[in-house]
Length: 297
Ligand SMILES: [Fe+2]
Ligand SMILES: [Fe+2]
Image 1 (spheres, rainbow, N blue to C red):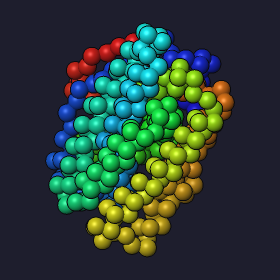
Image 2: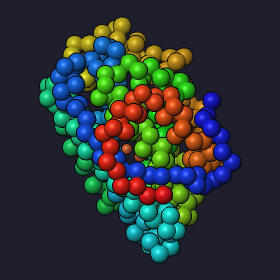
Image 3: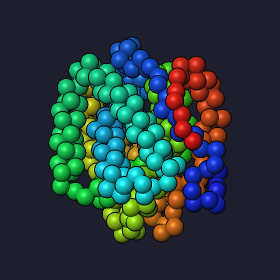
Image 4: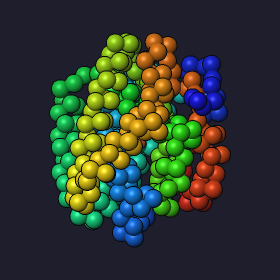
């Protein structure tokens, strides 16, 4: 299943990109329950590992979009895309803050290397900003945005238990992030197209993003489990199964990820917004009660 299929290769007319201001109590939630996902260290630390790459990743995405936009010149972009880029930057800046809080929750639990890993990513980001052309960095960002948008697909159609098994604050932050990633999923792709980026570079961006994500997430996942003395044989097998098993994340997402390789692909071929809300309406009701948000269409 690939969500509600659309024929258009452009944003839906009813698209609203909101940068929602919400507070989450991640530090306290993790303090109350170290294994906040199903009381299971393997799944909990997978999500901890994944998200710990986000603060610097999101800054990289913002840098590349901003630099590519400035290189093309605002005057050469449609007013819709210009305002979507502004809202993309604002959403990712808020996400960066939440993911930073999540990292602080991990540091508070004694996982000291998380900060060091973030410093390493920061050095790479700053090096890339100086040495890699904006269009190339944008091709990596556009592919990475396809990965982050795929989380909604995973939660709705493949693994709703990833949401249902999490404790309250983590349910909320995972869903909030999944929804906003869907809302802005085409922004960098459309900017890449506007910058006349080609297919080959787009595919190189996908390959680089995939390898990079796997490398950084698995390094952190192993570290977090080792720190807890949980890097046992049975947990190694469980971790392998979580990613590569029949219901594993990589296997479940592969068809969705491969859609990106179509020469005429566009992120809005599928629209997950309504299904995401209706699948987890009870949690969105909690989120909606917390929100104050500026919006653009
Ligand atoms: Fe994000
Ligand atoms: Fe994003």
